[in-house]
Picture 1 (cartoon, rainbow, N blue to C red):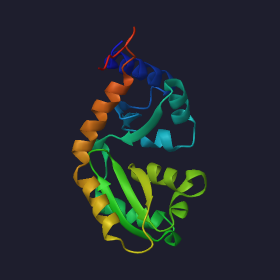
Picture 2: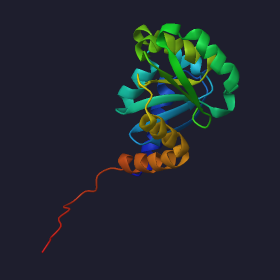
Picture 3: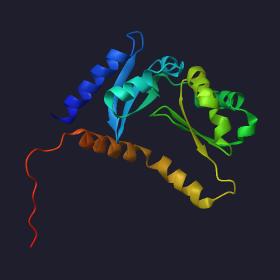
Picture 4: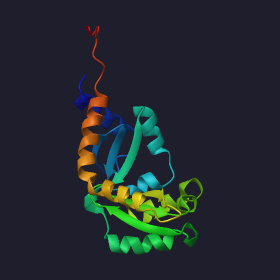
Length: 184
């Protein structure tokens, strides 16, 4: 059983759980995650347990992201994000990853930016259509943290390719038989 057949089984399980009205554009491995790209982020953000059911069925972590073709303009989205997220969260920076549809929100109080049981995040998913990721901003400006995060954004494409390769290798079944090595 190859990684492709495991991926095809994952696609079938996702299609069984997700209603036919929800448009799923692609499903792929990214490291230990199964990433689902969809044109309808509202269906996954509406508070139902679809993502949890998919994760339990696949026995893997699942990440739902919007299809990059359906994303809104980042300038308009940033303005709307600052309106949705309470000012007590103290947003420091907002970064956009256009190819994955993720928006990274750097806040001093990430708990407030997330909301109770992810209420604010679900509202962001419904209204703007991007996949929000909230990260804690350092309380004191740190050049090390800033440069590390900038480097991660810079090598995002290489990292994504690497994670896809690792995900496919993780999905491969174990080889059968004895795997002995003799060292002298």
